[in-house]
Image 1 (cartoon, one colour):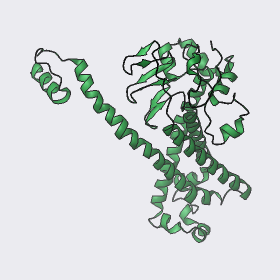
Image 2 (spheres, rainbow, N blue to C red):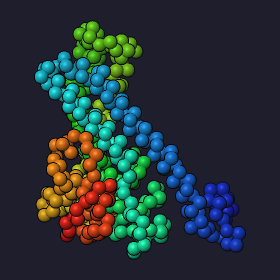
Image 3 (tube, rainbow, N blue to C red):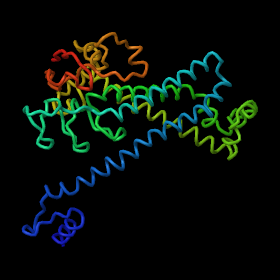
Image 4 (cartoon, rainbow, N blue to C red):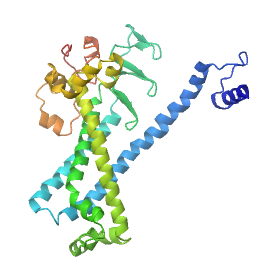
Length: 343
């Protein structure tokens, strides 16, 4: 019975049963035949679905903010607080959309065609020590951090800054929503149906908002569900993405990547020191200036980081701290200086 089950599984799912070896499976052939299917699902199906889902989530939060939170909070917050808050929300949304789009469309960066050693046995091209072959993207990625299914591509040397700013503005936006919508959540969910301070009970909002009937026409229960979903979503995203942003902050402070930490396998004590004391690294400022591309020309933090900018990073760091000059020049499309050596 066991032999029959293995034989049936091999023919139906792996299609890798060997006639000349009836009692075992060729796992290599099995993997080679299954992986293209998994790769197709990851890249073409799941990747594109999650890419569109990001826009849907952002549209939902923006709708709740504009249609419900801002009008309702204006009943409790003074005018001089609401106006800057609205401008700040527009600023965050604009930066979030810009950096997400750039992180998705700018390639992670691949090695130039060369006959140098070492070589990638899959790409048949030179593979620097800080490059890693992504089996999903099918390319070697310079300074690869990880493959992000939300971006549907890898995070590497050329789009890492966009990715970091995307998750940074995402965490900042969700945190702002959680704080700014505190009254909305309290009176429309926590104290719902116990007071007359709900959104749908306001005569002022009923007169001023053209969409008041659209929101409250189906009863206050729908409004309660919408507010709860938006608030809980932003709270979860703030905690998770905020923690992920700090982890990236730690890695960049040490000139490292997530994949680099896995490969180098630092000690537990080393990880603890990295996590809690990233600013103590002697190359902290140099690492960040080069990662953000602020060490070239007259670039400034306000004009090129706080505002949307398409400038390239000036350098990148290898996992071992060593530098290869032949891959620093024109890494992402413009001339770069040689990075400093990081120990």
